[in-house]
Structure formats: C-alpha cells, structure tokens
Length: 157
Image (cartoon, rainbow, N blue to C red; front, top):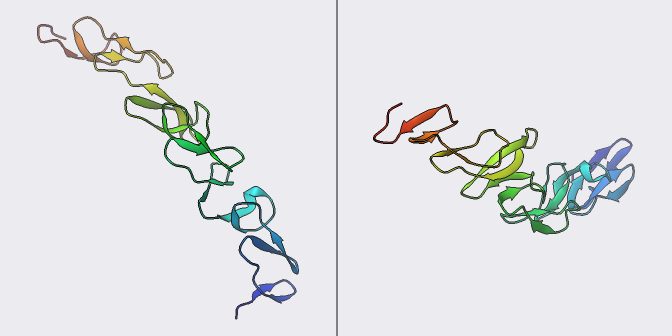
C-alpha cells in the first residue's frame, strides 16, 4: 500500500508535478500537477489558478474580460466587446456585453465576434452584416424590408 505498480515492480508515487517514466520520475510541463508525458497537451490536471484552454493546455485562470495569453503565463484583454473569450482576437468571443450579439464563427469552440444588437425598428440584412438597417416605413418591428411583424398604430399589414 502506498506504492504504484509499474511494469517491472512497485515504486513510490512521483511527487506532484512529475510522472513515472520507467524507474524515474520526470517533470511535467509548467503549471501542470499531473501528466502522462512531457508535452503540454499531456497534462491531466492543471496547477492551482490554472485551467485547460481550448487546446487542452494549462493556462492562467483569468477574470471576466480577460483571457490567458497563448503562452498561458499572463492575462490579457479580450476584444472590447467580448465579455468572455478564448483568445485576444476579435473573433474568439464566447459571450458579449449587453447591447451586443454573438455571431458564431467556429462551431467547434462556439466562438465568434460580438456585433452591436439592432434596436427595435431595425434589422440585420445578413448574419455577417455589421450594420443595422431601418425597417420599412410605418413598420415598428421586422427582420427584413419585406417582413413586418408590427405596424404603427395608424397603419395595417
């Protein structure tokens, strides 16, 4: 009890931050408490205040509005309109601040860019259109120039 069974015998467990390689204990990568090899993606448990990113690499845990740098060692700003993100790029937002809508660009990571939400009486002509266009005359709510959901009080559909 208290030993690890390995191919050729029983050994004391390796300390935190190391893994068994034959009869030796080898160091895991930085910010990794448990691993199965020396590559960054071979970590199975990140150190305190670190988390796995979208690549499966341990990076610094950051506050809302910030993300870990690609090296994983420091926190950097998300794009100005991103509430949460996976990288500092405009197209890597996970959620947006109020008044903005997330347009998904990568279904694998559920990330995209934050676009200004259209006010009532305006619509976006296409999913990737950054501009809000005004509904047709006498229309209060629409999703295109041809489709009006609510008319002004003195008008009819």
